[in-house]
Image (cartoon, rainbow, N blue to C red):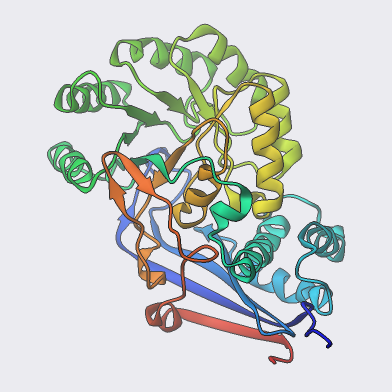
Length: 378
C-alpha cells in the first residue's frame, strides 16, 4: 500500500497589518530617533503537504520592513515546493541559499522565519503533539512578565493601575520602559513602581539602546537599590564589548539580544559574556531552527534566556529549555488568533493543542493587504 507524500505542495503567504489601539512610545521616540508605533506588519505562511497536513507560521516587523519581508518571502517560496516537510533544517538552508545575495541576517532571515515556524507547526500537528512536546518539554507552564503596560507614553498613575491589572491576570513580573532624556524621571517612575509592587515582586527595566556607556553605568548604579531582575538594552544593540563591561561592573543582570537577527550575532555576545539574560526573538532570527541553536549555545555558556515578544511561539520554546526562561507577555497579537494563552499564579500555561495551538482569526483576514499562493493545494 502506497502512502501519500509529505512533500510541500502548496504555500500561501499573507501580508497583514495589525493596527494598535494607541500609538506606542519608548525611549527611541522621546529621543527623536523614531516615530510612535501605530501598527505591526505580520507575515503569515500557510504550508500544506501532498498528504493533506497543514502548518501555520508567522514573522513580523515594527515600523518598517513588512512589505519587504513579504516581497522576499514571495521570491524564495518556490524553492520549498517539492521538499520533504520533515526535513526542516534542509528546508531552512535551501531558503537561505535562495536569497543568499541579500545575506543571512535582517529582513531576509526574518522572512525565512515564517516558513520555518510553519514547518515545525506542521510537524507537531502530524505527530499529534504540541510544539513544546515535540521539542521535548521540561515543564507545562513558564514564568512570564508583562511589558505592554509599561511604555513611556503611559502616565505614572495609569502605570500603577496597569501593574495591578497585570498581577490580577496572573502575570509574574513587570517591565518598565526607561531611557528618557531626563534621567531623573526614569528614577522617579521606577521608584514609584517598586514601592507599589513591594520589594520581592520581579521588576525589569528596558532602555531600548538609548544610553551611552557612561550614562548606562551611572543609571545602572543608581538603580541597584531597586533589586531589578535585569536592565535591558542599556547600550547599542550591537555593542557586545560595552554590554560585557557593564555586566561586569553591576550587580543587576544585563539583558539584550532582541534586535539581533542571526546565530552568529548572538554568538558574538555569548563569547564575550555580553549579557546575563540573552533575548533572542524566534521570528527575527529566522524561526525555531536557529533559535534552538542560540538557546543551546547560551545554555553551555551559563546564560539565561528571555525570548523577546511573540509569546504565542515562545511559550513552547521556553517550555523545552533546561534552564527556565522568562516569557514576555504582549497581548498585541491576540486579535490575529482564535485562541488565547492562559495565565495563572505568575505563569503562562503551555497549550496542549497540536502544533502552536493557534489559528488565524477572521479579523486577521480583514487586516490582510496582500496574499500570494504557490503550487497546488491538494
